Length: 302
Image (cartoon, rainbow, N blue to C red; front, side, top):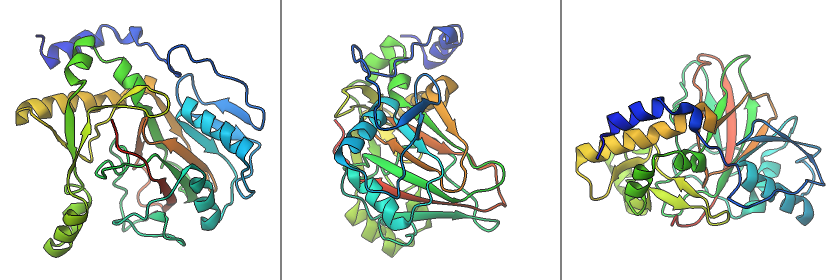
């Protein structure tokens, strides 16, 4: 079997042959009647115009937004001066929300606040999928910009179905059926004292998830490992697990699979956490960047 290094060399000779499928095979999209959708690219990410998130979202509008989210994986809204309560209400359209055990809360318990300034450097600049250390990771998240720097602080999302699709066939065959351990210990756990860590470990033990999950709605296979929370692949020697994970992590880094969003105050994004990874660029220190996020509870990956 060829080594991973050889595979990387082979990929470099075939960069122009990536196949990008936005929709599951055979699925045909339909027009949107209740808003204007402007794609950010051919694969992932679209801006929604003509929706005011301060107003109640009825069932017909929600159905179109949900379909757009499944098709485009992340949706963006501009000029949405919503309150924390309105933020929560919008996210709750997709289901019950988590109250995060480790992050600072905003004005309501379900909305967490990420506040960065000269004394607090951003640490979200690693490709990751949210809360995969939970047995049932988030379905998705709604993030809104409260205050942003003049330059920098963009967020990027990567389509993990496209990342999986473009793995070599022998790698896909190798990883289908494997599981990996996800843990908060080497992220949130690093700042805890022993007593708090023991209490949190009792509530949130390390969990196993498939390396390749199946999206419960679209049926697409997506990579489901990430640099922050995935600790090792079950059943592999440590060095083999590290090498394979490093190779899979790199899949999210290719621009062909990505969308990059430039924030402005009152911008809102909602993304499908089952289909994407994201990365918050930390290029704005020591400027202020304040964001708030609500995460929607999900299901057990399979």
